[in-house]
Length: 213
Image (cartoon, rainbow, N blue to C red; front, side, top):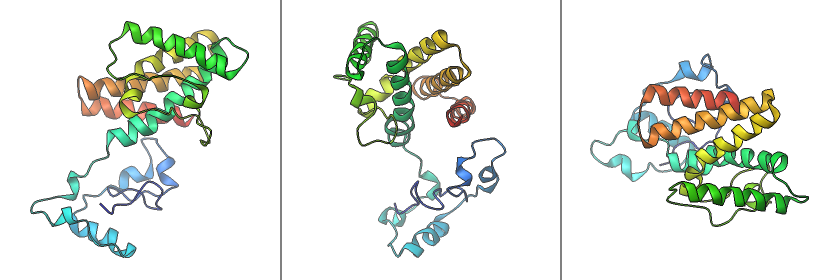
């Protein structure tokens, strides 16, 4: 579509946030007050400095910039959710799974996951789980390497792992981890079963604030 991407200096087509201000997830964040109802003329101004022609879809009669939304698949399932679950899986593997090597600990976590799969009707399941599935070799931090539907199906399991970590360590850190996992579970429940925009906004806010800490 020619819209700004997340690495751009001004990554949003809805507001005037920058790479610095978007990291502020509080309710008092500056970017929250800079939202505007941009139209197709604003879109042309956004793409013209790049020297790129406008996307043909904007020539369709009646098409509006306001119809463009962030995709859950890429933003959540393959993005924030995969990051969150990767971190939870990795911490659980290192702190709560038996085994002298990461490969063995990852295998024990896989055994635990398979048992959970057998108890729950998860339509799309992982075929295996290794330490490199949780933290790919070319990644800077844990990020679950899987398909979008597989990642989405693991959200409740991630909350279970976070609960176990909190019960074992009862630390402020693991309380935050559990809060992140619970907020993420709440958001997916709302998206899948009982959509409520106000409650979804609250779940996203809770996830973001805890994840940053």
